[in-house]
Amino acid sequence: MTATLFRRADVPALPTPTDPSAPPTAGAPRARPGLGRPLGVGLVGLWLSLIVLLPLAALTVTSFDEGWSGFWDAVTAPVALASLRVTVGVSVVVALVNAVLGTLIAWVLVRDDFRGKRFVDALIDLPFALPTIVASIVLLSLYGPSSPLGIHLNATRPGLLVALAFVTLPFVVRSVQPVLIEADREVEEAAASLGASGWTTFRRIVLPTLAPAVISGTGLSFARAIGEYGSVVLIGGNIPRQTQVASQYIQQQIEIDRPVNAAAVSVALLAIAFATLFVLRLAASRSQRREEASA
Amino acid sequence: MITVTGARKSYGDFAALDDVSLDIPAGTLTALLGPSGSGKSTLLRSIAGLERLDAGTVVIGGRDLTHVAPQKRGIGFVFQHYAAFKHMTVRDNVAFGLSIRKRQKAEIARKVDDLLEIVGLDGFQHRYPAQLSGGQRQRMALARALAVDPEVLLLDEPFGALDAKVRADLRQWLRRLHDEVHVTTVLVTHDQEEALDVADRIAVLNKGRIEQVGDPVSLYERPANDFVMSFLGSVATLNGVLVRPHDIELEREAPVELVAPGHSVPARVRARVERIVRLGFEVRVDLGTDAGERFAVQMTRSQAADLDLRVGETVFARAARGQDPELVGAGAAI
Figure 1 (cartoon, each protein chain N blue to C red):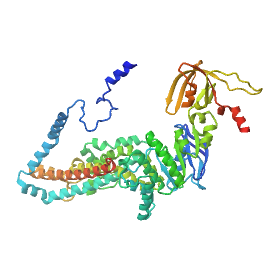
Figure 2 (figure 1 turned 120 degrees about the vertical axis):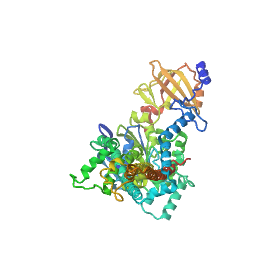
Figure 3 (figure 1 turned 90 degrees about the horizontal axis):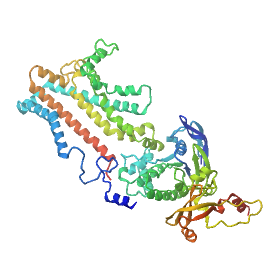
């Protein structure tokens, strides 16, 4: 008995990194299993450089081959500017549609019970798997000149909208779904007991909790939409100043051997996407921080 | 006054409520006490309208609310895990019920400040729930529920997520609050000590049925059956009968007793002292019989000192006077 006690006192159970019950020690640097810290950071840096930073830097350099004025002229050429306007305009609408309908879809998938729910759930990710050009062909055959439904969206902005909505569908759904699954139902019951209607509860209690997820999903679908090419290539019609999106303009400039123009418009797209994602991330983390306000 | 009549609720094959009827007088603090799965929470949630009964009625203050939505029942509900609105400040949490009733801003502010003072959260108006301790969050939740002037206040294991010390403090505080506010309160708990401590009345539930309803003293002193007896406080089995550990007398020798004809003497049980534990003001003696049965006896320190027991000694145990049915009967006749 005494011996056991002594042994236990001599060799206290140290929390090992693999021990899940060990609380994380705050402050003091803690030995991590496997990768040392410098190695991990180095690996991430290398990978991001190879995959993201280098290509983007090369692109930016190309776009300035003819100097600042060359860049500016390329971006502000009327057709280029028009394509950027169409792209951003349609993408904003698509992102907003996704914000509303994606949240609704996530809600229905989490909260409602119906036959074939798992099937519908699996369906959500398919737009990611389908080659986008196939999507374009399918949309054209459904909503094109020979539409069996009598809906003609060929070479119209609504046509662009449908194509972009198709390829960006999963973003908001998949970011909101887990948050909704984790959401505390008692909070909604508390609101109900205080007299709040279903809609009031959703608006004032549920939505603020979902906001970070909705915002980040919306940002992702916007970013995806402004760069999208394949799905709009057929149904969009590629009419300059009307339905030509930036990616199509870029493709056109490459074909007529104007790489600087192509690079310049690409950089403009990147800048828009980066600014949007950055601002949205800021907004999302602000609403998150408020909720987890540190004591 | 809350009246539940013939309440039934099943989840598949499991009957959470099996023909439950219960009257809860206005202004009382009633505890629904039972083990987990006894249906106590289901009963509370049915009163709130958060569960829909399969059969039966719920009447509060003369209004039949069986088919009325929780929003319109005039209730306040407090959850075990606080159910705080995390994105709102303490002030906005408490003001929520009033703000959706479109009350005047000044009136809301005054009422919220009053309530926060009552629950001891004055000065915490601008904090977020994440910046409060568990006990503070639950007091905020209580203020939030009281803000809408509910006809009844329903508390579902309100102190269950708190540590023992805070829990004990908070239930004392709840009792004092109830004495001030006088709102009809129903408290669900699985903790018999909590129920005995705060409630005016206790309804003991088991397997979806009500076993007994009464004030704490009568439930403790005169339990209707073995379940109620063993759920309200600890018990020992002596000669196959349930006895409270503090109602067992220990003697060194079995004295010869003169027994009047027609009377029986409570049987003594020979047992060996296995362990003596001193728990502050009380002493617990663990005993084992020759037949291998084990039971514990509680006594005060002075009783223990008088007996001066040693581990390994043989003693005789019997149910004390209060527990003997004949003697209780005789006492009542006097």
